[in-house]
Length: 147
Ligand SMILES: Cc1cc2nc3c(=O)[nH]c(=O)nc-3n(C[C@H](O)[C@H](O)[C@H](O)COP(=O)(O)OP(=O)(O)OC[C@H]3O[C@@H](n4cnc5c(N)ncnc54)[C@H](O)[C@@H]3O)c2cc1C
Image 1 (tube, rainbow, N blue to C red):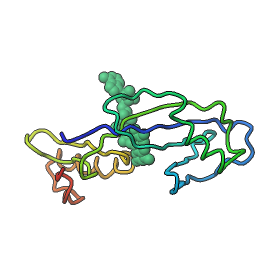
Image 2: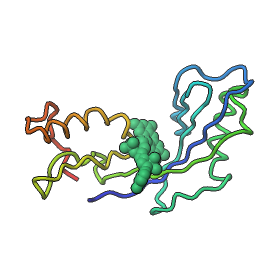
Image 3: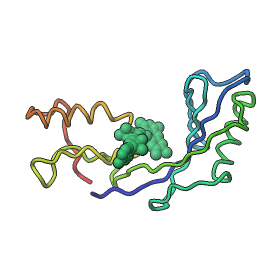
């Protein structure tokens, strides 16, 4: 499959005693930092890096996204308690997922969703379920097998 790993970083930070956390998800479009509210935690994500299959990380990888969030929400979370994580997004050259049949009739693909796998999960699952059940997919497959 034409899928390449694109590394991203995230911080998960307890709000704890902080007084002014964001109440809804937001995106700093200038700095490309996304901030989501996860109940009593903040999840901050940033960066798209070509690093092969290496998902390792070090504290300095998170300095920029932490600083940006702290500037926006100085009393938004207990920043010293941040948990660090890095993961790989399965990207295709066209940025479209590979959903449906390709070479083998009995193999249904549902992969390559890149940075919006959650967002596309219900639609992709619907297509896969329709194909497995032998129905015409309710969602058109146009472009989805192009990569
Ligand atoms: C940095 C980053 C940012 C993202 N941002 C977004 C976003 O903003 N919006 C969006 O819609 N999507 C986003 N995604 C994509 C989204 O996270 C994924 O599409 C989604 O998590 C896929 O869910 P899943 O349950 O299929 O797989 P996963 O979340 O990968 O879960 C698979 C689980 O199976 C476990 N596992 C694997 N192999 C085995 C085994 N052999 N035995 C037992 N357990 C095993 C793994 O440990 C893991 O817990 C992002 C991804 C990354 C990496």
